[in-house]
Amino acid sequence: MNRHFTRSLLSAVSLMTMSSFVADAAAADLQASFSAAQCEINVLYNGFDSEEDLATWTQEGTYKGWTLSSDPYGFNAPAFSEINPSSKSSLIFRRTQSSRNEAIVSPKIRIQQGDHLSFWSVSYPIWLYNARTVLYVVDESGEHKLWDNFMWNQTHPTDDTLWLNFSYDLSDYDGKDVQLKFLYTGADGDDVMIDDVKVSRLDPSASAVTVSEGEQIDFIDSSEGNPSAWEWSFPGGTPSSSVLQNPTVTYAASGQYDVTLKVKDASGKTSEVTRKQFVIVQAQPLEAAIGLPEGVYFSPEAFMTVPLRHELTFTDLSKGNIQERTWLFPGTATPTASEASPTVYYTEPGTYDVDLKVRNGAGESTTYLYQVRAGLPTLAWNIPVEENTALAPVSLSWYGYYGGSNWLDMPAFAEHFTAPLEPAEISEVNVYFAAAKPDPASSSLPITVSICKSENGLPGEVLASASLLCSELIDASQTVNDPTTFTFGTPVTVTEDFFVTIGDFPNNETDNIAMYCSPRREDLSKSTVYHKLADLDADYRPTGTFSWVKNTDESLSFAIAPRVTFKEGTASVASPAEDTASLIDPSLPVEYYDLSGRRYSGRPSAPGVYILRQGAVSVKQIIR
Image 1 (cartoon, rainbow, N blue to C red):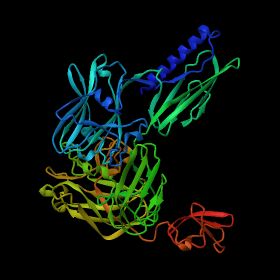
Image 2 (cartoon, rainbow, N blue to C red):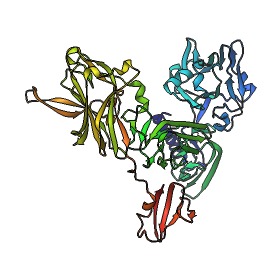
Image 3 (cartoon, one colour):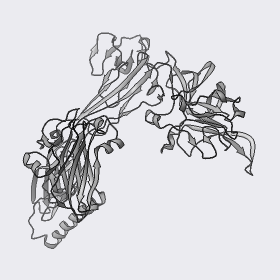
Image 4 (cartoon, helix red, strand yellow):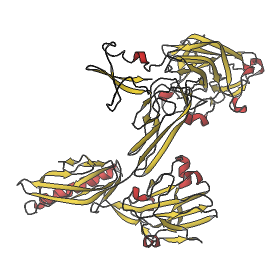
């Protein structure tokens, strides 16, 4: 809802109420009354709860395929009654192997400025390319496409099947007579269900206010007489009570809620009113999302790579009101969890998925991390998986490439890596080239890759180097994204931030060498790229020396991936001998408890997090 409009409405109602008080404060009897700025009346509404409701819309097409269903949609999407408790059924078009072109059309309505359309729909997104549903607004000038469930899913890709609420402003049709038309076209797609189709406009006198979970309601005191004190009661809301004249309240859970207002005037007279089921809160569908542990490396070979026995905290970043949550962490000492930010560690080398399922009354949503490499030698880079399909060279027009051959006095480049979670050994670096066609005069020139310490935030001391001739570089665009591998004679161990540098790139007339880069990002803090730039004197002439410079103009990462092997036995998980290291006197008896307070007769045999108690001292420890 437009916040400016809400505040204006709130102020207008308050001013009108105050004006009535001034005009006849003494004569008016005290009478409690209230409304809400979000109250609406429906110019058009159809919940498709009966055959009579269905018959108010006209079907177009040979088969009259739009019918009603009270069943759950399936694929984890419940019946619409889980979202709107008063719903009895929903409009449905069922899939068929035969081609269909069937529409259902609303009665004609006159649109006013500020009217808006909302409706709920669910469909299985995988098969929408076979058969889609389109919503048109039909007026005297023709049909105007407003919503296409296939195209919507192209910009909001998901494998989840959920009830979703769609809302559209109808101001473009102000003063026009229009109809709504849902058209199902195609064959061998899947079912589509639609419910609670309404065109609404604001009306403070409406009998109820409908919002989604977490949305605020601006209550308006419209009491008659001259109240000087207010006592509101909002069971199920936050806050649950208020003494403000016009409070704002939110409701976290779906349902129908009563609201009570008691007012008192200066003489002590009181008046009270309760509006039953005045607030209708609809369940908000969830969108599962996982927040990653800090410090992990992404990988071109997997989603990310992590060491064994290092504590990793994942975070539930799902959108919506979560009632149930289930994590799956195969390969860890805690294979399942339900908390919002579980901490786990991997116990055996392998490749594992991480799954998160969240649920509320509107259904469930799932997401996963595919292939977490634990304790295995793995390529690591700074490019998250969602950017992998958008890798491309960064062209500098006729000046060449950023991250390759160029005529801008940038002969070498560097990629910054944060410190590994545990000491790590690097045996090689893989570089993915989008172009690797050197000028014949450059073919025998070397390209050198080095691992460097970070000194003052820039590449410093060289720890290891390896070189290949320009003619040995592999064009990954022509070889199914095969990398060029620079192998070190002796692996190098890193424990702090480090850089991978590469250069010098030749810049003869026909040199065409360029590394793949991530797509450009809006967040400059995510940039990890540096370049060596020619130093200039006071007259802007090259001095013959070069300095490393961080790219602060664009947010990029090079497709540079060192092969990382986390060293065994370095992670911080406690061993049996370390259990009592944090206690006062390790020689005294130690009591072991799980996190629910259950005491063990001895040291627990199962890995996990436990409370160790020695007299009045308690510590939390991970026992492996």
